[in-house]
Length: 46
Image (cartoon, rainbow, N blue to C red; front, top):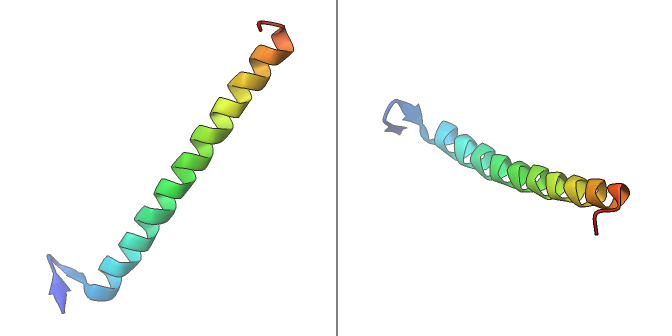
Protein backbone atom coordinates (compact mmCIF):
# COMPACT_ATOMS: atom_id res chain seq x y z
CA UNK A 1 0.00 0.00 0.00
CA UNK A 2 1.24 3.49 -0.83
CA UNK A 3 0.17 6.89 0.47
CA UNK A 4 1.39 9.84 -1.59
CA UNK A 5 4.55 7.97 -2.49
CA UNK A 6 5.18 6.68 1.03
CA UNK A 7 4.67 3.10 2.08
CA UNK A 8 2.43 2.38 5.06
CA UNK A 9 5.37 1.41 7.27
CA UNK A 10 7.11 4.68 6.34
CA UNK A 11 4.02 6.67 7.30
CA UNK A 12 3.84 4.85 10.64
CA UNK A 13 7.55 5.54 11.25
CA UNK A 14 7.05 9.23 10.44
CA UNK A 15 4.18 9.38 12.92
CA UNK A 16 6.36 7.83 15.63
CA UNK A 17 9.15 10.29 14.87
CA UNK A 18 6.69 13.19 14.91
CA UNK A 19 5.45 12.15 18.36
CA UNK A 20 9.02 11.82 19.63
CA UNK A 21 9.87 15.22 18.17
CA UNK A 22 6.94 16.77 20.06
CA UNK A 23 8.06 15.09 23.28
CA UNK A 24 11.61 16.34 22.85
CA UNK A 25 10.39 19.88 22.10
CA UNK A 26 8.44 19.86 25.39
CA UNK A 27 11.54 18.62 27.25
CA UNK A 28 13.64 21.41 25.75
CA UNK A 29 10.98 24.00 26.61
CA UNK A 30 10.81 22.74 30.21
CA UNK A 31 14.60 22.78 30.58
CA UNK A 32 14.82 26.25 29.05
CA UNK A 33 12.23 27.55 31.50
CA UNK A 34 14.03 25.88 34.39
CA UNK A 35 17.31 27.42 33.27
CA UNK A 36 15.74 30.89 33.15
CA UNK A 37 14.27 30.48 36.63
CA UNK A 38 17.61 29.32 38.04
CA UNK A 39 19.39 32.19 36.32
CA UNK A 40 16.99 34.69 37.88
CA UNK A 41 17.37 33.07 41.30
CA UNK A 42 21.15 33.13 41.05
CA UNK A 43 21.17 36.82 40.15
CA UNK A 44 18.96 37.66 43.15
CA UNK A 45 16.10 39.11 41.08
CA UNK A 46 13.23 37.80 43.19
